[in-house]
Length: 442
Image (cartoon, rainbow, N blue to C red; front, side):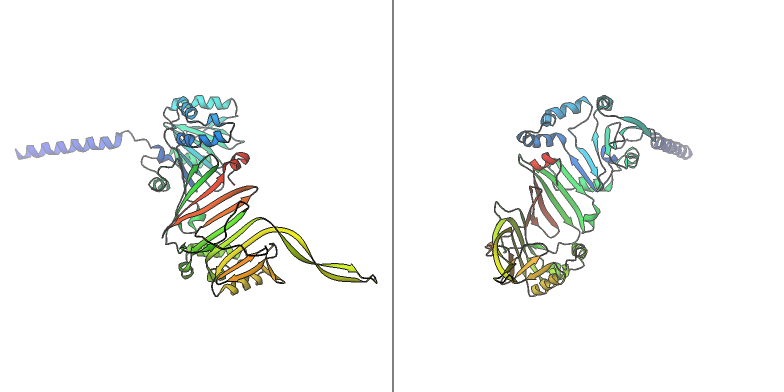
């Protein structure tokens, strides 16, 4: 009896093992998700196209952009449904510093996409080919490529299409790249419609483990909010009490910085200190002497013109027609410059270093920074002021950390909004007329 029971149990176990192995060996493979196929790059991003259309519609209407009717929520939703592209889901973007970039979107109906490709063919020369038995479409002149499969669409523009395509078609279920996995877990900018995450090596070299950017806009400006997180602590923080210059409507360029950097002075091995030192050496700037002397306040302001008296030497003839040199003055218009920096007892040593390198020159009673107008110097406590006008601008309380810079007629604005032990929050603001006029951000 015992033998019969043992035999039955053995047979049941063997049958269970066979069924188990059969399920493993012959089960249908689970296809990869769209996020499993995403290639990584220096910059990766998510975009909710329809919500972006809602957000930017007012800006496009206000600026009377000719193509504004083709970027509305309703139009894009209709086009997506017509060609099987699910624009209610995020579109994923990836791009490198060298300009190569691409995008992937979810297809709700892969059978509809060919009608869209045929429509494009009426306007663009499109050829097709295969790679590892997967068909793709391309325009060599523009280096643009298109490939689609069951549930996904890939667009790519650049020089590494086959490398990207290989990654897309060989993906496996739950095989999402670690960069995308880390990005999609981030809590910053969760409710934004365009979020960019950076893997840029140049940021990594500064010890920045996370760099993210998010879009925001109104009718007059485009705003890029930023978030940086450092692996090690940030050895600087915002100053509580500081002095600065006041900006005006005529201000063309302004740098206004107020930071407590005492901890930075003690940590010269910090990655940011090291990188800034390398940049300083490249341009011949004595960064070590600067950090040693600087106590955290720096303001430079340029804007408008000032009338000043300039002394010059003129050669004249006397009554006997002999040449002689005469010192005279004339009024000239020069750019209005003012610069303020707070420095400790090492301040004069830093200025001497600048003069030794030719960055700062003394001329009579004044000074010149490289090609600047002749500047006067006023020292008040630990504050050094260089200015081109008849008197130094008034100092006012300020704890701002921002840059206003006019380039080719357009005024850009960048600010550090807050600083924590490991994090920096900031924003870059660009007038939208600049983007629409030149089709560029910078």
